[in-house]
Amino acid sequence: MATEATAAAKFHQNPDFRPLPAPHHRHHHHDEQIQQLEQKPKNLQSLTSYDGLHFWQYMISGSIAGLAEHMAMFPVDTVKTHMQALGSCPIKSASVSHALRSILQTEGPSALYRGIAAMALGAGPAHAVHFSVYETCKRYLSPDNPNSTLAHAVSGICATVASDAVFTPMDMVKQRLQLGGSESLYKGLWDCVKRVLREEGFGAFYASYRTTVVMNAPFTAVYFASYEAAKRGLMGISPEIADDERWVVHATGGAAAGALAAAVTTPLDVVKTQLQCQGVCGCDRFKSDSIGDVLRVIVKKDGYRGLMRGWIPRMLFHAPAAAISWSTYEASKSFFQDFNSNKSGNVT
Image (tube, rainbow, N blue to C red; front, top):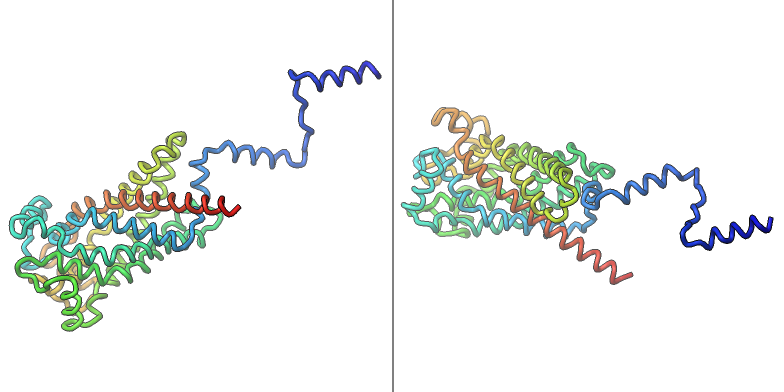
């Protein structure tokens, strides 16, 4: 017995040996799950957990992203508006280069930025609503599965209904100012607002709202679902460097989603432009804001190709715009996540 005790003592004292932990049969499977979770790359763990930001932080992040997106891509949007406005407007060709040359030659480079103040007033608040509603709905609809494609699509639709209610009036003012040249009816943003109110009534600001929602509902459903899927796929391809190149992931995923969604919804965007610009620069006026009536007028005047007018600048707008928007949005969210962590650390 003494010999066995001495041997056991030497075994425990020998640094070359390490005692085995006591077995825990009841929690063996649970321990394996914990170990697998700990071994999982942090960048992939972030895909299966929500960001934990406050509602106001989503709003600020979305507002910054919207302003960055629309300010950077505004000249492309101006070209698209000119191409889609049928009637006796200056641009009648479907060529992007022809439209751009015509604007520059007749009105100068500054014409590409006409209406940017209206865009700034509308884009910030609208995107604040858009992203905050999207994040809130996503967590509400799928609290246990952040990667649910259906939740992303439905959340995107809810977000666009809310944000379009904010953005549509300023978008209408922006497009009317974009078409104005030497023949412009309006001296500026506030002159446009006052004259529309006086001559056409408050309803004119929302003449295209139904069309905008009908267009943006499938747009955002395709857009958000494609973006989330592309982001997961890109991060899954190279998880070990995803943290270092996270902005590339958001930019690439956003660009692909934006281009796809833009191409699919171009016909409705043409209808929206027609409704918002009616009576300006010789553009047709419509007896109602019926989507079907506007579609028939477009097809009668310009054929079915008229429904795709401006699809190239629309894609050229939404692909880089989405890349800018998502990169900026995720960067802002990362800032607030660090802010929340530091604040929590200081408290504890």
